[in-house]
Length: 210
Image (tube, rainbow, N blue to C red; front, side):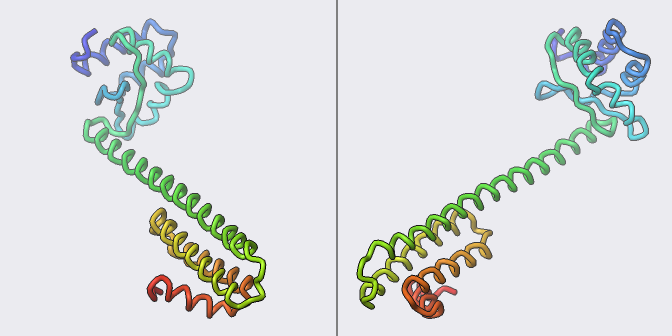
C-alpha cells in the first residue's frame, strides 16, 4: 500500500484489518475512538480526545500492541510503531513533540553535567596525588629553598588543573573552589607552611584573581 495514502483512509482499513486479529470489542471501540494524526519516524501517531484517552491503553497494551501493528502492516506494507497522544488534532501531536524535545534536552543537559563533573573529579583527584608525588620526589625537604621549589611546582600544578576543570565544567565554581582549597591545604602540610601563605602565593601566580 502506498505511503501517500490519506491517514483517515489508512486507519479505516486498519480498523477493518483488526477484525481479522484475535482482538476484543474493547480494542475495536478504542480503534474507533482513535484519530490518526501522523505517520513519521516509523511510527503511527494516534490521538484521543481527553475524555477518551483511557481507550489508548487497549491499543498499546503488551497483548494488543502487536495485533494493532499486524493490522497496520497488513495495510501499509511495513511494520511501524504505535504512539498515542492526548488530543485528537495535529496540534496536539506537535505539542507533544515539543514537550518531548524539551525533556530530551533536559536529559542531555543532565548527562553533559554528570560527564563534566566526573571529568573534573578525576582532574582534582589526579592533582591531589600529583602534589604528593612532587613532594616525595625531593630528598632534602628540610632545606627551605627545596621546599620553596616544591611549593612553586605544586602551585603551577593547581593552576593547570584549575584551568582544565573550569573549562570542562564552567558551572562547577563551588566544587572547583573547594578542591583548590583542599590542594592548598595539602601543600601547606607538606611544606610546613600556614595555608594562608600558600593561598596568597597561589593568588599571585594566577594574577590575583579571587
